[in-house]
Length: 123
Image (cartoon, rainbow, N blue to C red):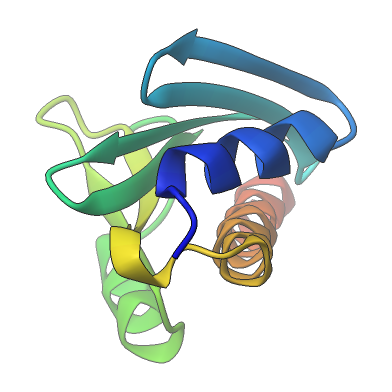
């Protein structure tokens, strides 16, 4: 089985756009989502690949809508900070890390973040 760090390294390096290696087990990716940059942090910690990004400012989306999306969309979920900033995240067990799975979960994270931002922009 390939080393998950090497798989993530290769996948991130092959992406178009702004990518960066932040530390031994941390990367950053910036892509357009919903009309402005989405800065995604990716990290390998405690046997999981974790990816997260801030989606919107406090109060920009109805909390009930976020809960509904959490039940409807697989693999990604919304949360908020104590200040109310809205974030999206996903986790993948290290044993499941392949380029195909990375493409699937990170693509889903960016797509759903973009859809949420489109709702914010339409308000």
